[in-house]
Length: 439
Image (tube, rainbow, N blue to C red; front, side):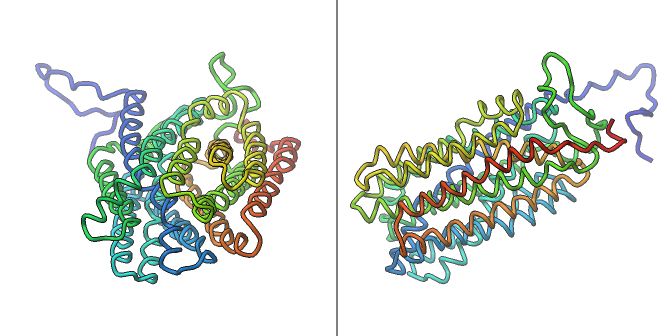
């Protein structure tokens, strides 16, 4: 029978003592480093679908009406992958779940390149659906960063993982032109070049996790003592009103889901059609690539600050900030002249920041509301809702622009963002029901 930590094996008097294992903070730091490396790589892959997928479909179909379909397929694939990754992580750990998602994304990226070479829209759409698995893995990696984090530092831990995506996300869109030259040299369509690079990046992210993400953070977290119940009222802890983890599901879960769903819906809808809007008004792929690069940077770069603010003031305050920032982004995008790259850039930066506020606050609310025993499975299902919202935003965005206009789409997004504010106010006024076992 294997020995446990409480009953160590007998050793001879002359045997040297076993070296102590790394402490929990050291283990958490190492896990964060590995997650950071994989996020940088996967960030490159994340950017490809954002930057050129709509343009690639537009070239193949010779129509703007279905230009939002690639984004819808990416997020629909992300939805299916989120369920799979969540269930695999629940039973096998974060390492195999995330790595499988990245490998699927790499295969999907290779399929996009083949579809572009063959001018085959059906293969393109199937490959984009599969490519969405890489996006799901990139997003779910934030949960792995929070598995071993102390409750009062949870938002900052998941934000650290998110911010690593910034480097790959900013570099990725700006590789559009060089990757296009590479594709041309390989006798491939120029727009497929970024998917060629992204496929390799997803594969490298998967290998990074498979080789070095040990011990698995979720499996290790289950072997540790139970998390402290209720707010920690030390000088370094969170504000007393900040919701803390529990052994029972808390009523904050619906608010967390709503915040992330609406943030994703608004962000994807406006972001998807911005490159198409710019292209239709004479701007080249370099200009749209720069705008999307700054947008993706704004989605992830503020994460450490957002995490610190969330830990300090509570996720509800950050959720309200998300609604206000997305509202401003939608209004500015609608008002910006079509020839003004500067104003469109500012609007897309605000759009990214608003999404970041929503993701960090919503993730913190959900992680605090769900017990560790079922956390990975629930997190996967929540990301399904996020992906469905993104698919809806991506699919309808092209239809709305074709039927009305890009400014109308942006104003519609602003109206949805405004709906976050009453939801946060109602949630703040709802008393938190604490089970007797948690008192």
